[in-house]
Image (cartoon, rainbow over all chains, first blue to last red; front, side, top):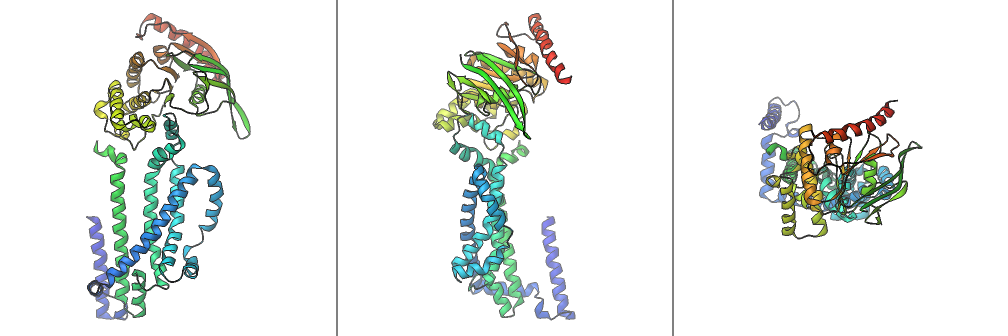
Length: 252
Length: 253
């Protein structure tokens, strides 16, 4: 309810300023697109199919890069979480690489992987891997050691401990890590597509700049925002149904 | 002998200082015997239990179970913890079936066994609940059923009723007594409640204040079903209280 009102208020503010600007010409009207113009660009690009192509192109890149990074982060994060020697080995490397803003390496990815799909997928994978890996490892390390004792005294082997205790106990943290990574993937795909891409939402936005069509820029940004919210809502819903055991108290 | 504790010592090192926790513990536990380890807090009774469980290694000495040295935790020694330590993502039934799942017992067989032990602890109607939905006393009943369902010959209980209110505590003591008359496990039970020890134990092992040694062992010659208000009961209670007090006093000197 409040959320809906807040969104409506924001839209109203945007409409008020942009249509007001039309009247008083406080700045060049073309620079400040109105909601109507953005909707028109949106409908046009839906009609000619370009929006669908852009969205699917970007989403495929995000899915591939994020998928690869998630698999790697999960495997390595769990390994680091359960093995102290591996942790001591990996930690300094991660701490060295992690503070470098990933965008600083984007040109490097273009040099290595060219202008095609590979560079975008690799870049998204690289960017999302580190935060996901760190979050997965942290949630594995946070698993209550008493749970491991309890399972060991019931006959659990090392593999049992990972499969039947560490993974389920760390799963809430792992899902949060994936949410974080997916959000970040949508974040950086734009940057990757700004540089040398011929399709995708980032390219759509850049095209808006090249052909001086601010409404297209705003439309692209809003579509990205909507995708992000939708993905987040899906993951939150998945979390709710997966972690019935944490919220069970409320329904008892 | 079911459990043989042979010259077990344990010291902990913190900040480069070695603090002895247990010194030269020798204890033989017979098959189907219920032993209560009693002593002031910090006397190392839980440490001894953790060594028998295989969670800690003794600094010196050995633990033999059925004549074989203990090298780590195992399904032959079930453990019941003070803080229950149930798997929160599993239902009550899932928790009770956990050990059987590890052994690869088929699902219908698991369900049958779980049902039997949930009946024993009176929780059949709560089988599909999650641990967060249960009270402390119910959680500890689940933990006991989980340990029993795995069919260990030994059960190690580390102040299992310590976190419960007095009424629940007495009820669970009575239930454990009843269960023991059916199940006949070898039980090592850590407590600091003298009443609890006299109510449950075949023998009460009183430990000294830190570093823990065995001070005195009392054989409780009372009928299986005990009356907390019988004169013999209170006599054991006051006798053991006197011995424990000497040790508690030492802590405060």
